[in-house]
Image 1: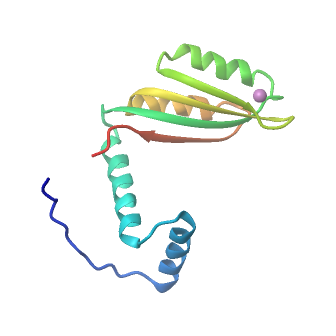
Image 2 (image 1 turned 90 degrees about the horizontal axis):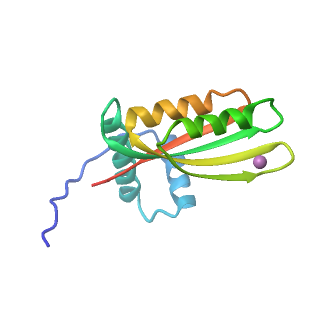
Length: 137
Ligand code: NI
């Protein structure tokens, strides 16, 4: 197996910002900055490549909502039935008020984002986050 050529480059950065970065890297268990920066660059490229693209992706949506809000459970269930792209879901009753839902959505990037927006914008949803992934080189 031939190794890909590697290039080194210097980065100018304030000491304060670098110290904060290093602290997070230690907490995350990175052995060195290079590995962390490679991960950040890959993550950035993946996100950019998917912007407005027709690439097939898998999205994981995490929602936290207050199940006391009238109609919220029904609305979320309805949305999930409406889109065949939602291929898996998990529900956790966090406490007396909050429910957590994890949904896995498969489709083209734009579509996954649209479905996520419809879920997160529902009244009663307190927090929502989408992680998109797929084939990564
Ligand atoms: Ni619940």
